[in-house]
Image 1 (cartoon, rainbow, N blue to C red):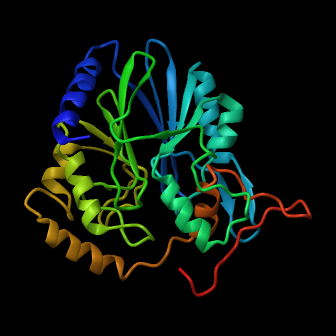
Image 2 (tube, rainbow, N blue to C red; image 1 turned 180 degrees about the horizontal axis):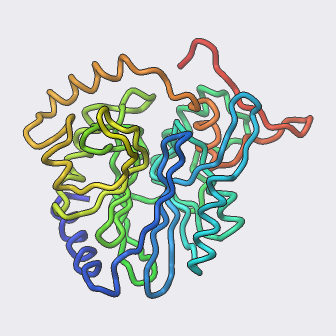
Length: 308
């Protein structure tokens, strides 16, 4: 979608979202173990809802999964009598496991992700030598969103935007006046996402960020993570386009593409891999499902040696 078409489509969404009865209601749940914010967004009139970037708890020492974080989401949705239409993933996360299939069983909702998940499946399916039955066509998900695809959440118009760079498949979901942008940006005092995973690109990330920051200044941005920047004593996951353009320490207005790429590349070279990357990617590329059980009925997470 061209920037001009994006602007026109977004103007329509914002115009609808400014009506008092057509603004999204929001509740976020923060998991401190993985520093992940799960967002529940709904239409106040119809109660139609989407759950974005959910968390399945995982203990790496024992290999056990649980759903304490997701149970809080379920309790809220039921208390508010919401009708969940979507379980949305902004990308195949490398730092936490998705609870989307479990939440779908509890609450309903189609599991959706960007269409370029097939690139991630191809890359990591090869790295982890996935079983022959693992298809690399996105079929594990209920819906693959394309760039500029519009949809509705009750009375609320919405649009999906392809914003690659952190991974090839990153999507932002704009619902009313709220944009759910995954890992593309962090709070202004923390900066931007890394771009050194397989298929990532600092240059592409810059272009995606500028695309998001071309949205109206008042657009609310909801982030997938926060890590408490130095000097800040609380977690925060909501900001605005205006705040990011003025204050983001990595990519505020005036930072050139080349300067950003140089900074991001140097910074990424100092970073360790996320603690949960091995289980996260293997499960999230399967839409939150565990790898198929082997002949003893047990699912296994593989660790490739001297590869990543």
